[in-house]
Image 1: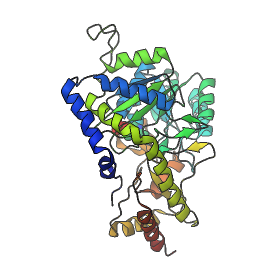
Image 2: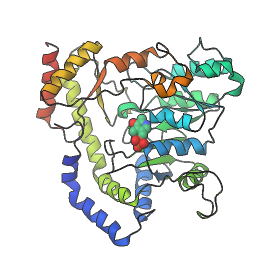
Image 3: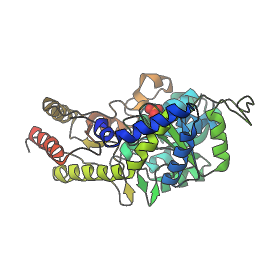
Image 4: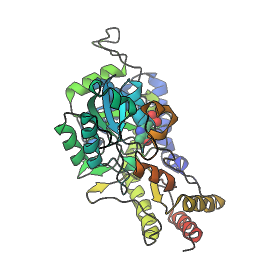
Amino acid sequence: MNFVDLVAQQQRIRQKIEEKIRIVLDHGKYIMGPEINELEKRLAEFVGVKHCIGCASGTDSLLMALMAEKVGPGDAVFTTPFTFFATAEVISLLGATPVFVDIDPKTFNLDPEKLALAIKALKAGNASVSPLPGTISQELSAITPKGVIPVNLFGLPCDYDSINSIAKEHGLFVIEDAAQGLGGEYKGRKAGALADVGCTSFFPAKPLGAYGDGGAVFTDSDEMADKLVSIRVHGQGEDKYNNVRIGLNARLDTLQAAILNAKLDIFPQEIDLRQDVARRYTELLSPYAVLQVPFVPGGYKSVWAQYSLLTGSPESRANIEESLKKDGIPTAVYYPRPLHLQTAFTSLEYKEGDFPISEDTSNRIFSLPMHPYLKVNEIERICAVILASLHL
Ligand SMILES: *Cc1c(COP(=O)(O)O)cnc(C)c1O
């Protein structure tokens, strides 16, 4: 059994993928070929925004958005410590300071009430209101709150109405990290369209994955889109030998765009299949109080990048994972160490206990195999092994 089954998907559309690759080999426009524009148009329509700008990875999509917002040294950007490293890495890469905000214990997403507290703490220079990086409490006057990066963790959108309104009140931008979230929905709107800018990743294991790295940025703003297009290719102006700002080489490959165009055809159906898999898991596991099944608030739709369970204790997690492994069923822990406790962020001087929900969750969470082609009998077998290991 596979954690994510890319083979089953490829078997469905292999011929179409080969055709699209052959077309690229024939026209030879490997850099910014026509497939890029086609994909961007289709994705903008899918997400329901005016502009989609393809790029080289999910990490670059976040970096480009922050660069377009002119984030740099002296700026603070609020984000969750319970996410993939890249979310906060790009903030530090630009010389700005990540300020972490703890998560909601049910959704595992950034908690809007704690965001309001963190902004208050930073503005007042008072770390007793919400933990602040050590460097900030010393030189507070030098740090300006600039923006927020909420993450649609495991495919579930955040509470964007609350987050956007808090951000607006304080003049902060909001960048939606929808690297795991493309295909999700919030109150009738699609993930990627839920903040000032939306970012996503086409890493192969993401809900819409390429056969290599790729990403995209979404926005309704013409001005933002122009900046992103420029940043994507070395800060180009009228042409690439007229450079108007410092940028990147962050183009999406034509071949990856061709592959994504083939995969996008079946993506809506795959989203439905993911709902079926998640529903079946929840039906079988929700009767048992020792496991916390994923919580999807009313009006939200998860794309189920991961189906993650919270166990009663770290020991219980270890037992369940061991039993599943013995049965040939792969599991994974996202994420075993919250970002404020990562070695790379020691200079921020956060300490254990600063974000108790993230820390506790990282000790007890694990994820089950999740992909559109998981069969009902496989789901039943996985759940039976879990229940047996809990003596239920
Ligand atoms: C995967 C991921 C990224 C980075 O995407 P890449 O394409 O691997 O660079 C960023 N944020 C989150 C939440 C992710 O899951």
